[in-house]
Figure 1: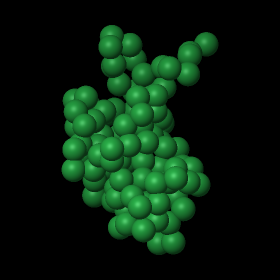
Figure 2: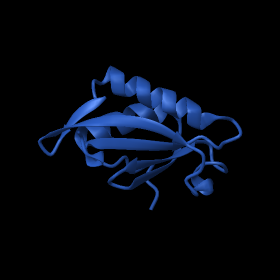
Figure 3: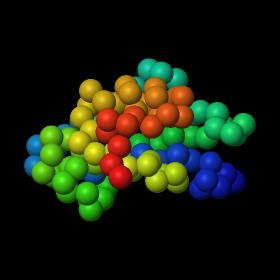
Length: 108
C-alpha cells in the first residue's frame, strides 16, 4: 500500500460567493491531464497528484475578499492566494513540473 507521502494534494478553497474556487479546481485538473503530470516523478519516486476541494483554508484575504481562491500544496505547505483559473497552467508547469514557486501567487 502507498504511503500518504506518495501523494501530492492541492487543497483549493471553494468558499467564495462567485465560486471561483470550483473553476480553479477544474482548470487545475485539466492542466494536470494536458501537461501529463497527474503522476509525476519527485525525488526518484512516482507520486500521484490530487486536486481536492475544501471549505475554508483560513486565508480569506487571499480568497473570499480577493478575486481568486486560496490553495495549499501538501505535504510541502506552499500557499498560493488569489488563484484564478488562468493561473492553473503556471502552477502545474512551474511548481509541479519544474519545482519552482510561482512567486506572483505565493502567500507568506
